[in-house]
Length: 489
Image (cartoon, one colour):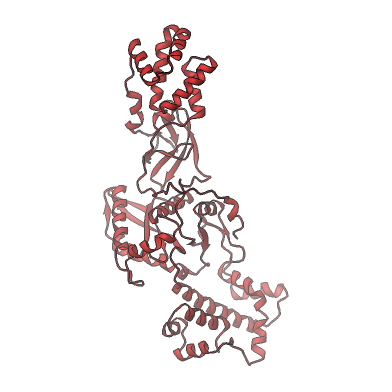
């Protein structure tokens, strides 16, 4: 006689299209047994009186038993004592028989879940593995993250230097950009960076992690504790990665490692998959239309760091100084370590304005000459050229030029030169609006013009596109209340 769970499993698998032969192999039954229970519309019933009654008494404590077995890892004797202290009926022999059946049922179900196929855009799985490789002649520990779409088996590998929560979010964000969209659900393990409480009864995701996925409209799901088969799609590719990429490899530098990993990713995505018998890239083409489109901007999460840029266009972060484009001197910006090896710097609007490789040592200054290029542009020097340049740009504002000459007297040329330099940072229309405001208020100075522009207009600076960055869909806007995932437990 089979159990209720086994009877249900047989029927669910058959409804999913799994063959009778495969069901029999998975559950360890004969094919005739599988056929028999597929024919029967009623669930199996037991005709013995004593044993089923003894076992059914423990059903009320099933969830507690599962937690004590698979989460707390209690021995059978400890579980029995805990339940008896709560007034549970039943003998020790019937409890151990019930415990044995629970272990068997959980083993069968874990094998079955591995066989379930998700539809296009339904699910992605995420995990990572640690390796030691030779980089620039030195052995270095690395972490390779893998995100895989369940339907197409389309993979995105990302290498990093740590497994901090910020790095995990970076790896996922890069994968979403690589996929050009996001799936409905993401299956992860129970690592502390993502899950606060892995208990099946009180599953709670980390707040930052849940908010990150909510921003991308992805529902988080955690696999059951001690059920590695649940994430079979993401577990198996690591074996191939180790055998066909990690072993025997050495890399000239970190960039060479990333380039080689990108080539490996391209290769596996263009190779026929053993289970689907199709190339992942071909199935991804089918799956793309089922993925959620990306929001306009990447996620800025709560653990970003504010930094003030000094007047040398430098900011300090973790013992080093990094340059920032000169328009942001004196301003506050976001800094974000990316995958443990790159520092990304963002404006207050969330635009990437600079990125630098993080050096191995401390007390170093990392500069990009391009960040100072605008300061070296020439400005007219003679009074006549300054006047002509101003009127060529703002022909309607000769009155302002006369006013500033009367107020500033000998210093008017320097004031106008500084206003002309603002054309490198702001649109001509914005400066015209500032000049009109100055005339209305009868104020003639560079400080007024600059303060007006800072208050009412954004700097015209075109930030660089980061390497491996997501391909954001700028035609799509996402507004979402991030508290929607507070209920996840």
